[in-house]
View (cartoon, rainbow, N blue to C red):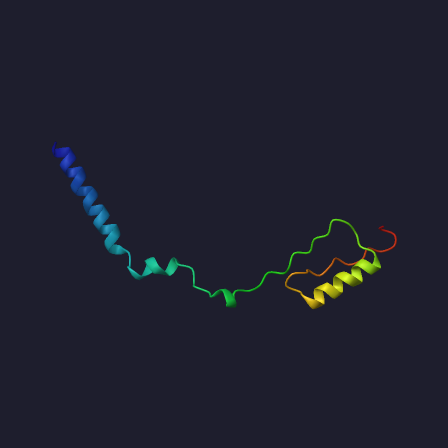
Amino acid sequence: MEFLAIMVVGTLVAVWGVVGSRPTRRMFSYLPPVIPPEMKPHSPPDIWQYRPMDKTEYAEAVERHTNDPAHNPFPLPLPSEGEQ
């Protein structure tokens, strides 16, 4: 019984020593900074195609992108003549 009492007192002293040695402001330094959505950097738009375009489709895609870039990503460049 005496052994358990010594262990409990020792544990309480150790916990008190560790908790007392840590500064309280340090706890809040790990929080991420709050950035409003309008200030967050924008990621580049996704560029995705399931097949290569010909010159006409490429021109139409570029025109759609210039008219509404938020909803129409810039098309991939046309492949060279040897790649088709």
